[in-house]
Length: 198
Image (cartoon, rainbow, N blue to C red):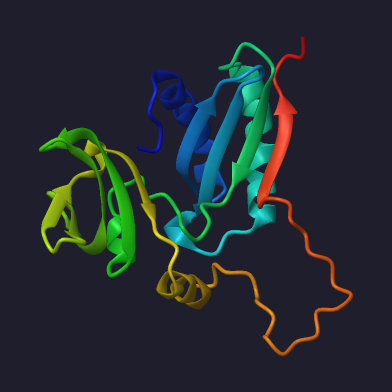
């Protein structure tokens, strides 16, 4: 699920060695259409270590020359590099095992008994895939390659786990006086325009 289309898989082959050299892993890669294509790369430090905006910026700068030389997208496009966030997508074998006990939403590539979307709790992950206890207390077992989408559900438990792992920015105490502070509402991304301008 890291890359879905043939174009995305070609881009992943180009980008993954660059990420490896920086000690990072590509979590998801998507190309969206529109007037100007949008190349979205979601990445994190190897092993899921805390990843920040500067890590994304380093990856973006390292990817630039490689993408320019390979020229995988013929028209001008926008490059966006971001971290997975708290309610992250689960795209690789092993991702589910890291988040046992947490809620997840899954969409299967092919329906089971006419149903493609499921919500439940991650119980385990083995060679046969991820084991999910569904809300109706039945179990879904599915491998990553059988899914078209899987994301963690934002819960208090997930936020606390992210905080404990160092993947959550410091939060102010409720009693802190926030008057005079400005809130940066920009996304946690490093975005630039690249490709051949027309």
